[in-house]
Structures are given as structure tokens and as C-alpha cells.
Image 1 (cartoon, helix red, strand yellow):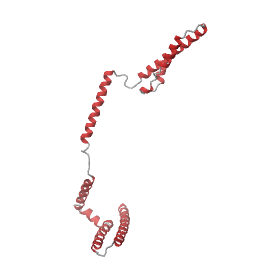
Image 2: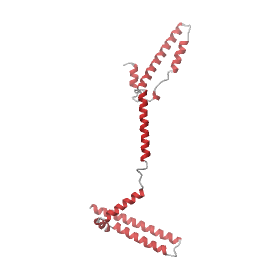
Image 3: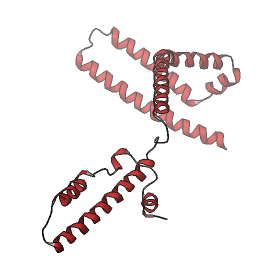
Image 4: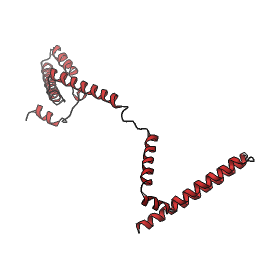
Amino acid sequence: MDSGEQNCAALPSQLTVDDVDVEFLPLIYEIIRSVERDPHDSSQKTRESQDTSQKVLELQKKLDQARNQIHRLPGVEYSKEEQLQKLETLRKQLQLKKDLLLKYRHMCTFDIPKLTAMVLRFLFRYLANNEQIVSRLAESYPVRRAAQLVVYLFSRGQQAASDPRLSAERLRSFTARLRAELQNAQKEITQASKEFKKHQQK
């Protein structure tokens, strides 16, 4: 295996254009300067000739290394026409995807409130037509407690609205009592639901 193949094997399998070392000009400049110099001393001339030969070898090595790196660049195996054809294909695919996004952007939107209302209507219709479920729910404490709370809040709200003595202070007091009732009822319903689930698991 020669030095060029060894350098090629040492390079990573995937390169970019920025990884290719093409800094040849400084070395070429030094070679030209060495050739232009004409020392009179024979020993110095011999030394200059050896230095120039060494720099030429370094330049050859850098050229071989750059050639091996270029051969490893992705897509270098394609001709100019093939590269242009692939680029045009990618442009068409990109434009097609953009057109599809514009076409279907507004076709998959959902109105969450309407969707929720539709689901609730379906559930109520299903529950109303299932006597067994209605009977089980009627015997459930959370449902009975929630119904009692709704009736209580409705009646208290009517009384408060019809009271001519209702002031801002009494309204705040009434709101605080309602909030406390709601919190207590929520705790009762949560506890009853847990007990009901435990009873069903048994």
C-alpha cells in the first residue's frame, strides 16, 4: 500500500468541502523562491537544491492527499449533468410538499368546543338509552350528591338575587359560603368515588 492509499484510509469516511486541505500556494511560493536564488557557494547551492527537492516532495504529498479527500466527498461520483438533474428533482419534490401543505393546512383543523359538545351529546344519548347504566348511576352517591349540590346552588342563587337587601358585603359573604360548600362537596364526591371503586374491585 503506497502513501496515498494510507492517507486515504486514515481519512474519515464522510467529508465535507471544508475538510479538504488545498493550501498549496505557500509551498509553491517557497519552491519558486528557492529556484530563483542562485548561490555562488557550491555547498550552499547543494543545500538549497536539497531543500527545494524536499519541498517538491511535500507539495506532491499534499496534492495526493487532497486528491484522496476529494474522492471521498459525497456526490463526487456523479457527473455535472447528473448533479443538476438530482438538484432539479429535489426542487420539484420540495415544491410538491409545499403545495400539499398549503392544500391540506385547513382541512384537518378541529373545533374543540364543538367536538367536546358532540362527544357529550353522544355520551348522554348512550346513557339515556341504557337503563342498567342509568340505574347504577342513580344509586351512586357522587351523582346524588352532585344533584343535591346543583339544586342547593340554584335555590340559594334565586334567593340571593331576589333579596333587595343584598349588598356588596353580603354578596362576598354569600360567594364565600358557596365556595366552601363546593369545596366540601368536591371532597365528599372524591372520597365517595374512591370507596365506590374499591367496592367494585372487590
